[in-house]
Length: 300
Image (cartoon, rainbow, N blue to C red; front, top):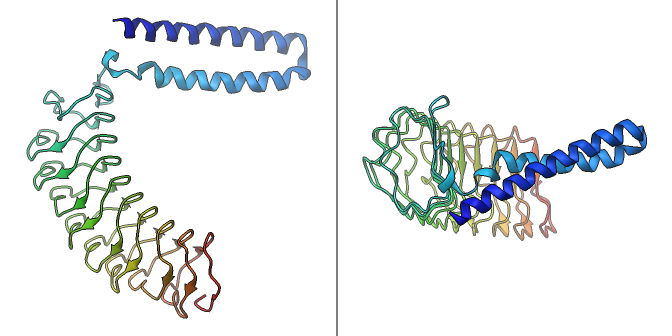
C-alpha cells in the first residue's frame, strides 16, 4: 500500500510540474516573443520527458495496473509481476501477449495451446533456459516472438507450428549451440536475432530452411569460423550482421547469398581479406569493415 501511495504521489508531482511548465511557456511567448524561443525549447524537451513518463512509467509497477487486458485491442499485459510461470487466465481471444520482466523459467508444451489467435508474443527479460518441442504447436498465426534476454543456451528443433512467424528474437541469450536443421519449420521467417550470444561458429545446415529470411543478426558473439556452405539456403537474405566477433581473417564463404545487399563486418580484429573473398556477392551495395586492422585489401 505504501508503494502504491508513493507511486500516486509521484504521478501528482509530475502532473503539477507539467502544468507549471505550460503556464510558464505561455507567459514567455506572450511577453517576450522571439527572445523566449530558447527557453521554450528546453521546456518542450522537458514536457516530452513528462509525456514519456505518463504513457509508460505511470504503470512501471505492474502490480497496480488495473487494465492488464485491453479487450478493444486484444492486448494482454502482465509485466513486472515476478511471475515464475505463464499465467493460465489469458483470454483465448488475446492477439498480443506481453509477459516481460518476470521470472518465467520454462514454456511447457500445450500451455499456450488456447492462444490460436495470438500474433505477437513477448517473453523479454525472463529466466527461460529451455524450450521444448510442442510449445508452439497451436500458434499458427503468430508473427513475432521475442525471447531476448533470457537464459537459453542452445537452439533445437522446437519451432513446430509457427507457420506464419516473421520475426524471431533470440538476442542477449548465452546461446552457444544451434542444432542442424533447427529452423527447418520456419519457412516464412524474415528476421532472426542472435546478437550478443556465445556462438563461436556458423556451421553448414544450422540455418537450413530459412529461404525467406531477409535480415539476420550475429553481432556481438564469439564467431571465429564460418563453415563452407553455412549460408547455402539464405537465397533471400539482404542484410547480414557479423560485427563485433572474432573473424580475424575471412575467405569466400558467402555462397548462397545471392540477394545480399548489406554486410556488416566491423570490429572483428580482422587483419586479412583473402583475394576473391567477396566475388560471389554480385548485388552487394554496402560493406562495413571499420574498426579492423586490415593491411591487405586484395580481397576487395
